[in-house]
Amino acid sequence: MVSTTSFKTAKSEEIFSAAQKLMPGGVSSPVRAFKSVGGQPIVFDHVKGAYIWDVDGNQYIDYVGTWGPAICGHAHPTVIKALHEALEQGTSFGAPCALENVLAEMVIDAVPSIDIVRFVNSGTEACMSVLRLMRAFTGRDKIIKFEGCYHGHADMFLVKAGSGVATLGLPDSPGVPKSATNNTLTAPYNDLETVKKLFAENPDQIAGVILEPVVGNSGFVTPEAGFLEGLREITREHGALLIFDEVMTGFRISYGGAQEKFGVTPDLTTLGKVIGGGLPVGAYGGRADIMSMVAPAGPMYQAGTLSGNPLAMTAGIKTLELLRKPGTYEQLDRITKKLSDGLLKVAKEAGHEVTGGSISAMFGMFFTGQEVHNYNDAKSSDMKKFARFHRGMLERGIYLAPSQFEAGFTSLAHTDEDIDKTLAAAKEVLSAI
Ligand code: KE4
Image (cartoon, rainbow, N blue to C red):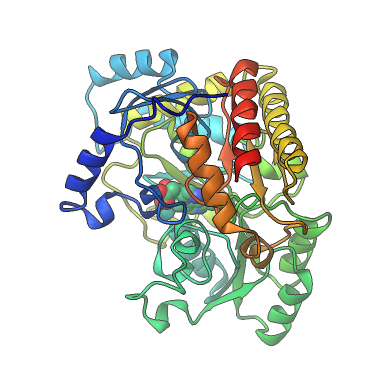
């Protein structure tokens, strides 16, 4: 038995209740509030490698990794050392810096679709900028996104979005004017027929299609065979652009992202999370002829005070240097598959209907007997049971994403022993819920 008696949360509760008087819902980002899994969020004290310590001294094995950036493990010594050195040079220049060239070259070398890249400060910024760019390049206004995909919180994407929007069960956000979303068309994920229909109904009006090539924001949903290839064909046929939002999958599914893994090259790609190594970095990039439209090379305006700052560039460079070492993705694939296969096995042995899987350092599990190919399938899974599972694992020192509509993440720091401990805890919890 994994003991739960030592699980104390008094200090977390004290700090979180004060936070609720200072910040909306007591958090800086909604999905952290544990709304859909119940109970109060734990307040972190510090993190290292695969582990979290909270303010009450509880230790956890971490499968969120600050939502993706900690793929080499939290506070990796190589990254921290480089940041200490970089700090001495200053935290932000607001001017060109050689480190931007270094990270840009690494991204361009790694990601098949990217000839030219622009750094920004978040995935949201990357996605809203790439949307403006695809409209500027094609002269068309409409876009297609997929139900359950999340591309940050810019107005035009808050239509049937995943992640925190789905977690909070928000139909769509107030404050978003119809004018911002009436050019946003949606289709179910993995549904090429609907995409074809939308193009037929909106001839020469669709600037492009944007999607998560592996969906992390509806839980874990993979593209069916032919889906990505089909989108590539349909967009080409209609003179529209194909955009892969790889903010989550970039440098996680493989060093070249999902586009390298699946062998489908979009016209533009967005990145974030991992390329900042834990500091705020986003990026968008793609074909040189399209990127040449971005100011000041071209007329499409986009800017940012802290974009490309030397600290964030340093953390990104060091993280990608660690990831490009031979054997990285084989290690991530092995450890994550062991976890994912193990979770499904113990769940089935405890009599639960479950489905799920993993690709490289990304995994997910739904409490349902049916396959999950899109957001509707994900929504039909047993959320209440997921909430009980989440709580039981938390009390046994396993920190899972606090929402069924989030994927789980592993890192190079997770060991076989961590996985064995996680599966032992899961066995207990799953036999009790
Ligand atoms: P940020 O603005 O949060 O850096 O990135 C937005 C974004 C864009 N595209 C994809 C595929 C994403 O997954 C994200 C952000 N992911 C969420 C978690 N699923 C961030 C966590 C949060 O919202 O607090």
